Image (cartoon, rainbow, N blue to C red; front, side, top):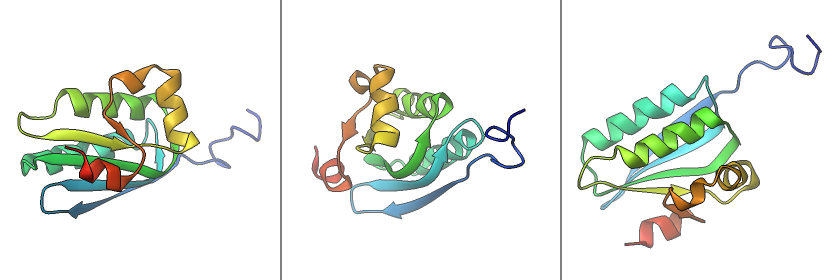
Length: 123
């Protein structure tokens, strides 16, 4: 194994998810890497957030540094499986997040916004 991919030198990324409740929306702000190792963390955070039946759930990917296919799968599943009465919105504008979404053609399937303010104001 080369030094560039050695898991001891390059440990799996980490992800933090912070929730902020607004009057008409719940916001999950992600920071770090959204990959195979951290995708279950987002799945759990989304499940917890939608259990409160917010009218809008915003996933803010502004501080995500790396978005892998497992993360894309979680985003797509969250949008498709959102309970009735909860509208999903995703903030993605940086190269690390928007580029993988575009390369996979998911920009047509995901409700994307460039800023948190735009996502909260949409409606």
